[in-house]
View 1 (tube, rainbow, N blue to C red):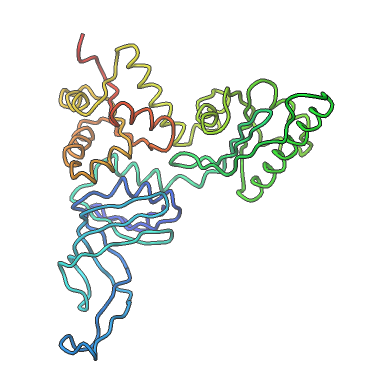
View 2 (cartoon, rainbow, N blue to C red):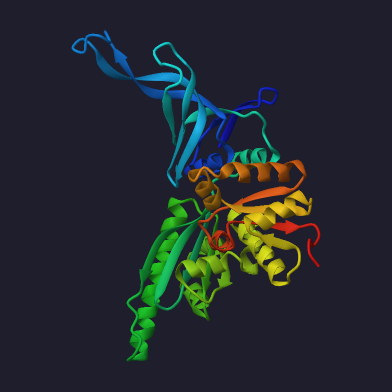
Length: 356
């Protein structure tokens, strides 16, 4: 995301969407009641309104400002719906309109007040570049390659090798080598196509070391970090994101940060120490001034908005922000977010224990 202009006095930020990940960030920043304005396509009726035969409808680019009433977000789209409060003469105020936000869209967002956690999200989106980290988890028969994303990870390909489990050992070794060659070719392909800087290669047992013996490309070798995992597929990728071998390369990635935050929360919960979870308990912690940071999933936020129950949560987040606490929006796309959803979607890490 690119911040094209800001006016702090007017609480106004002009933003350009550069990647699909930016849509996720924007969905966390815009609230009901905010004003969003920009250029959009609007159906305009031309000709006489009394004479249906002489009138027609055309699609015309116009500048419109709306008061936000609802957000509809998916991985590849964001629709902002609301009532028009400012527009050119051809458009009537008070009518409903929706902005379809996509890559290269430019919009201006105006709030009654920007809270620190919202500005932090804007800053994070503006500073983070596209990720260039590839994770490959595999064993003797299966391989999964994924790209680390700001909101989680994207599976690029999953495939199985034609490996013989029983029979002649020579044939078995030959089939294994062919499977390793297939993995290497995939790594080379994605490294070039996606401009990959780091490759995390993980497997149970000795498979990763065996594959490295077959890898002759020295430039590719320089990008590889070896890690151990007990599973393959999505479970293996989630496991790898928490491994100490890859913390250094992933430490700047939001996904790894979020997973580690949830793991810290679970550790405190298991010790019955500095953590609470659930909306009621989290609210009590915030009101007592004990909440050092709030962890809340985007799924919890979206659900509350859909049910028109977000006002209470919004007030809680802003209260936390006003008391110098941190607000961490956790993606439900990865394992950490799913675990937090299992705890009710919201929790708090505490400055001190509330109950003894």
